[in-house]
Image: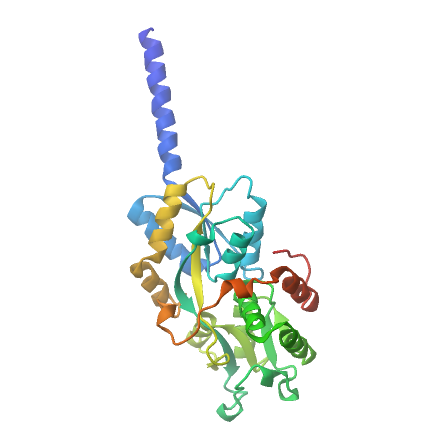
Amino acid sequence: MSLQRILLVICIGVVLSACSDSRDQVVVVYTSQDQLYSSKVLAAFSRETGIKVLPLYDSESVKTAGLVNRLVAERQRPRCDVFWSNEELMVHRLAQKGIVREEDISTFGYRSRRLVVNTNLVTEAEFPTSLSELTSSEWRGRIAMAYPLYGTTITHLMSLRAAWGEEAWREWCQAMLANDTLVVDGNSAVVRLVGQGKVAVGFTDSDDIAVGIRNGLPLRQLEIGKGFPAIQNSAVVVPGGPNPENGRALVAFLQRPKTVNQLVSLGALEGADAHELARPMIVWSEVLLGFDDAYQWLESTFFRGGSSL
């Protein structure tokens, strides 16, 4: 072989090696954790490991659902390494569909579902003390909630279904709609409407209320029922993804106490360990039982069209 050909082979080898190294230093993550918070954590992971993160974020209106449907569509040729969700239901739904493995799911940190009230419109003596109370005429047209097909709102409603039973749950959902409950795009929209005084009460998340209070809105958060479970963040490596080792490194990074505490300090999480709370944990096998029929009923009842999980 001539010297020229030898040099050409060496050059090609160097280029291929560099391309391989470049691919090895990438991880693709789909995340429903708010970009404001998740981007800071992912940047910290890149600084520490040298691995470039390629993130795909969701939108407020459809939250986790869009990412879940994308993962289902890509199941034959996965493009994602890690799915990081700001709740748990949809990652367990992916496991139910065989897209990820149940035993690979990791959870960390927690938020709470809450009622938020406008303190200019509702006195402490008037604060609602139960969910059934909100179906009374006193609250007609004064309540807001996010569409219960996505994010923590579907986790909330499906958990209520498991706790109450199908019949009582459907009756309550129908009674809420009959009471002219305003159904809107996302939990932050609920907080905004309550803060502006357009409604008096809303169903939302603890982190969204914290943002509203920091912005000077006249808000107060209340417990939703007694002992309602906390909602944890979850993460899982997607089998067959392009960068499995980097995916496992990212999931391990997300679970680290330092990372979880960063998310708490940023306001993305309410606390670090849901097991320390005096609350039951969600039993996902019960929540997912009959999921398809329950989801279709929710979709037809709170119709906005065009979704499948």
